[in-house]
Image (tube, rainbow, N blue to C red; front, side, top):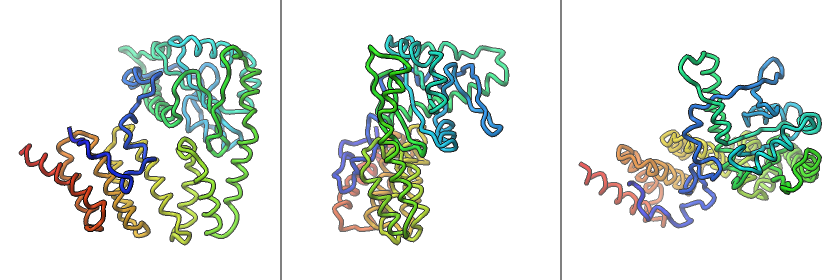
Length: 361
């Protein structure tokens, strides 16, 4: 194992909000973890909705399966969207919710006309519909590939939402900002109450969009201050879905006139590498931190953090072949400021991996 206990380092290096380094990060969601391996071969019978000539996959309830599809169309239409997570058949409440709300004739007329809805059902019942036997057609195989992709994305979305039970409902604004969890008491599963509880967060959704609209006005520095004020007010879940704000900050202040853009360059890489690590693309994730450390706008302390994160990610692979690259990152990080407190931590890590490498020879 490449992970020594001392890798839980002090906060001068270790960012407590950096979710990739959480050892519980990978698919620990109780309602879905046992199904992940099975979803790698998923296939489901889809219906399709069409917009501008392109078809988007939806389930039997009329809900989108792909988060990005629903998000894109919501922004295009100027409407909010919802994420619904269930465990049909394996959980009585989920089954009752699906029957009483999602499959109600009133759901399409009262909900789908106003909101895009993404439905992630992580259940054995869904899996049972997805078996592809010998002689499967090319179309069936294509759909299986599509589900493999979207199911993996669904796991990540669920994890980012910190979903702990099913059914769970979450609301997002038209620009993709997380608005709130929608809580519905189990003794009142109905379309009428579903709409009522969703609409309870109308004010917050409108306020978020108004705050975002305000970031479009003013000088570079003024806009960046508005972005930073809004972003700083977010909790971890809200920051995980603030992509549009992060991308705006990076595009607005290309020379770091505000002194704030490095924070968003780092946050952007954090978010991307979170996804990559969920896909077990550790080398690609580490490389992004390495590239950020080469950016001339980035300050020395942030560069040191980048090299540490890159080394740590590769350490999580438990792959002896990654040790030379880990050592390279640690050497580069220490060289930036050999007298810093961080350099001592780098020395500890470097010595550990160096000894490990030599003992394996």
